[in-house]
Every structure is written in structure tokens, then in C-alpha cells.
Amino acid sequence: MLYWAVVFFVLAIIAGVFGFGGIASASAGIAQILFFVFLVLLAFAIIARLLRGASR
Image 1: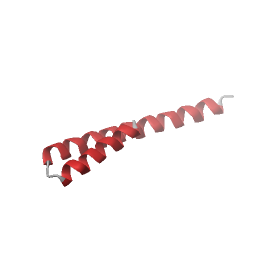
Image 2 (image 1 turned 90 degrees about the vertical axis):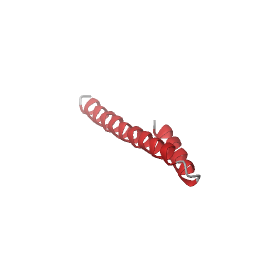
Image 3 (image 1 turned 135 degrees about the vertical axis):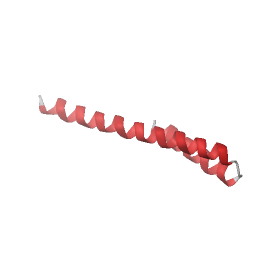
């Protein structure tokens, strides 16, 4: 998921350089959403790992 966030971020940068403002802002928005979803899933994975490790 982090890979796709980076891909959309790079697409936003390239679109911004060439002057496509609408595409750039849409790609940046998608990248931002994917990045935050990645962070939430990472937090859940770390918490699950800590809880599962503590019960052994």
C-alpha cells in the first residue's frame, strides 16, 4: 500500500510540473489517503503483534 501511495505522489509531482493541476491535486489526495490507511494498518499490526507476543 505504501508503494501505491508513492506511485500516486510521483504522478502528482509529474502532473504538477507539466501544469495539470486537477490531475496533480487528485493524485496527491489519493496518495495522502493511501498513506494514512497504511499508517493505520501498520499501527494495528504492531498492536496485534505486541498482544499476541505477550500472551505466549
